[in-house]
Amino acid sequence: MTDSPAAPSPYEVLGVSATVSQDELRRAYRRLARATHPDTGGTAAAFQAVQTAWELVGDPEDRARYDRGESLVVDAVSGESGGGSFSATFHPTRASARGATVRARSYGHPGGRARERFLTLMREWMGRGSEADPYDPALVRSAPREIRMLLAEALAEEATARAVSGLGIGFTIWNDVAVHAATDAKLDHIVLGPAGLFAVRSADWGSEVKLAKGELTGAGIRRDEQPFHELHASAKSFARQAGVRFTGLIVVVPDDALAVPFDVVQRGRLSGSLVVRRSLLPKVLRDGANAAGRESVDRAFELRPRLQEAVRFV
Image (cartoon, rainbow, N blue to C red; front, side):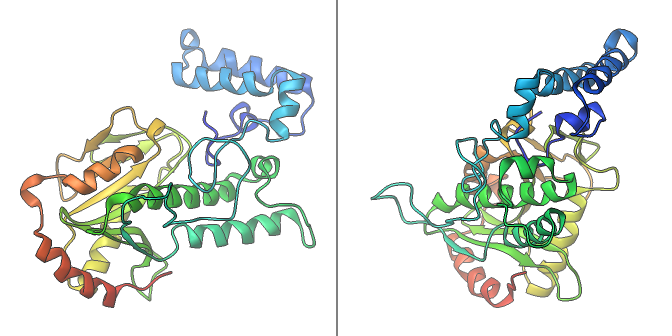
């Protein structure tokens, strides 16, 4: 269990409402501890999730701190762990210190659509006229998971944009790009540089993920969700209308969501697609997933005006 807004709350793990009594909570924990124990047919992962949930809310004082949001420490500006509550502010081109190197060109508002949808649904859920801060950690924690997922999506896209903004003047990034006027689909990021043209999806499902049979799987990924296939379809649609060809597809996830630094789809039409830890993404974009497939610098400059003409933001 992580502090990601997308992660199941301990109450969701224990299968109870956040308003249950401490006695009801304890009964739910004991029932699930027996059911998920490996010796009684459960799995180590499920059993550990139940134990972690109980550590967070099993003690009344710990539960009160959790309900106040005191241990929710994800920084909405950076997407990394840190102090403070969620913020509505994002600075995609802000240098970390004076004298920083020239930043990559960046266009669009990373995470913008997800932020707007989060705020709309959060305010509806809070109730008309509420003056509470929609980013208050305690409120975010108690919101339905579909609302929390939108905030996790926005944070993931913002964190990726910050991670790649330091790649340098040879790179151009377009964020929140519309795929086609007739569809709601989008590309989170398009990155152009000497290593090629990449379609990038930023994701945080609040759980570990792994590659299995050419697709991403994980506890937080819906059964009907196919992250790589969806990214491929969106990239193909955009490439067709823009008259470009993507060098590769990348799904980037928080570092603790992937057991290995990166993994590659080995077979099929998605062969060569990558799932990458966020901290490794700048290196992948700089060096290329396949050195033999690197574009020339001249080719990158040739593609830039074509993409500028084709890109529309959501």
